[in-house]
Image (tube, rainbow, N blue to C red; front, side, top):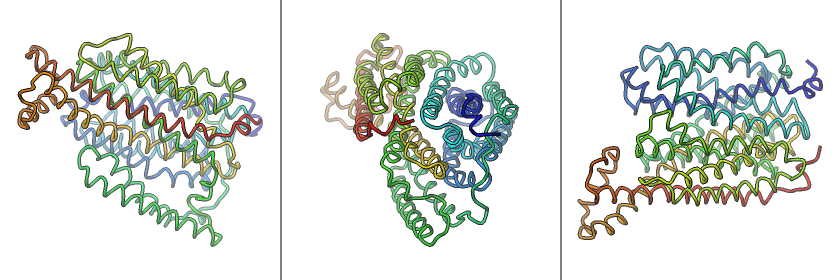
Length: 505
C-alpha cells in the first residue's frame, strides 16, 4: 500500500491505536481483578504480583530485540504477530483453570506479545505520518492512552464486580479481532536488513542488563540490598552492551542499537520525559488505589469512580493538545503542563486523610492529570523530531524501553517512599497523641503493625484512629512531594527544548 496515500488517512492511526488502548486496559484490568483471581484460581496475592512482575520483566527485556526484528521482518508483520500472540495469551488466561495456566498465558505469551507490539506502535505511526500530521498522530496516541486510563477502572470495576474477571480480559479480544480485520489499512513497510544482520551477542547482553535492571526495580520494596546490587550489575552490563555496540558499529557491522543516536539532544530529552512521566502515572495510581481500597475500603467500581478526576484531566488535555500545537509550541505547552501538575501534587499532599475532602481531592487529581496530558501527548514527538526515517525503529525501542522502566520504577520507588512516610508519620503521630510513648520503640512497632491492618480502624479507640490519620497524611504527603520533584525534573528537561525546531512541517 502506498505510504503517501496512508498519510492522508487516519485509519492506520485508529487501527494501531487500538493496540495501545488494549495494552493500557489490560494492566488496569489486572489491578481491579487481583482479589477475584486469587479466589478463583486458589492462589495468593504474592503469586499474582509475581506474575505481573514477570510479565513486565519479559516485555522490558525483549523490547530492544523486538525493535531490531522490525528491520529484519518488517514492522507491520511483527506488529501483527504480536497482536496474534497477545490474543492467544489473553485467551489462555481467560480459560485458565489454575494459576500455572494463567501465568503461561497472561505473563509469558502476552509478555512476549507486548514486547513485539509496543515499539511497533510508535515506529508505524512515525513511518506513516510526517511533519504536523505525525505530531497530531502521536498526540492522538497519548489521547487514546488517556481514554483507556479513563474507561479501564470503570469497565474493569463493573465487569469484575457484577460478572467475572474473565470477562474483563475477554473484552480485549474484540479490539484484537478489529485490528486483524483492518490490518490491510496499515502500511506494509519492507524490511531494511537481513537476518544475518541480527546482533545475537548484543541481544543476549541487552536482555541480561534489562532483566537485572527491571528485577532490581521490581523488588526494591522487598529486598533493598539485593535490589541495589541487581540494579548496579544491570548498569554495569548495560555499559558493556553500549561498549560492544559502539565497537560493532565501528567495525562496519549492524548494531542491535545505534548508540550514537543518543547524541541527539531532543531524543534524550523526549525519552527521559517519557520515562519520568510514566513513573508519575504509575506511582499516582499505585498510591490512590491503595488509599481508596485499603484505607477507605472502596470496591473496584468505587475505586474507579474515585480516580476518575485524574484520568479525565489526562484525557481532556491530551485530547486538546493537537488543536493547540499550531498556536503554541511544544516547549510552552509542556512547560504549562508541568506547572499545572506540580500544583495538583501540592494540593493532593493535603487531601489524603480519614476525613476526606472530596472537592480538594477532585481538584488536585484533575490538575495532576491535566498537566500530564500535555506532557504525554508531545514527548514522543520531541524524541523523534530530529531522527532520520531509517533510525525511527531504533528510537521506538528506546522510547518503549523508557516507558516500561518508568512504569516499573513508579510502583517500586513510590512504594519505598510510602513506607518511609509511614515510619516518619508514626513518630509525629505518637508525639502528638501519645507523648508518653515517644521513646518507646516497642510501642512504635505496635502502631506500625496496626497500620498494616488499617482496614480494622472502625470502632477503634480515638487515639489509635487519630494516630493512623496522621500516619496516612504524612505518608501520602511524602509521596506527593516526591512526585512534584519528579515533575520539576521534567520541567527542567522541557526548558531545554528548542522552540525553533519543533513546529517545522
